[in-house]
Length: 164
Image (cartoon, rainbow, N blue to C red; front, side, top):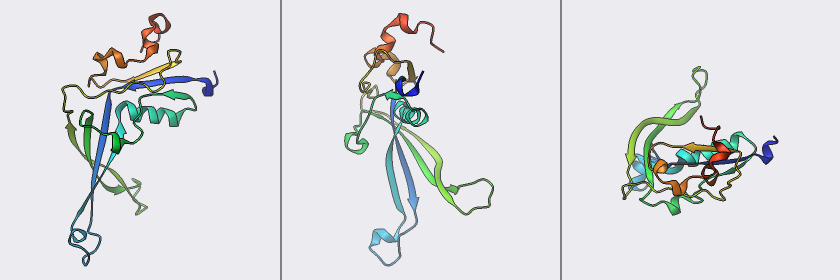
């Protein structure tokens, strides 16, 4: 089968990763805040949102999944969030380079949603004729909310022998 015609549905639990890191002062003569340590943060897609991106990068196929277009603008307190602290580490383990990259220094935990169950998202352009269905289930609500399950799973005879 040509990968360009391959239809993959990726779905599951949703998590927003909050990444935080500290940088040294920008200078010692500027505004007061510039003379102190600076804390930075960014939000990145996690769980099934990240898995869908990775699969899209790995294969040249038609990937359908939940989506958040502007994570900063659409972030609500109803999403599960993970928080991690980043720090600079050597880019290579061989010690021959002074290059540094940011990596996770410490996982700080989760911030739960304002409701009991984290917010889930429907699959963008769901396709009941998907060739492959990938589910990222971390037991954070997806497995007990059939309304968010891909339509391809609702045709039992199609996938009865395909589960791993």
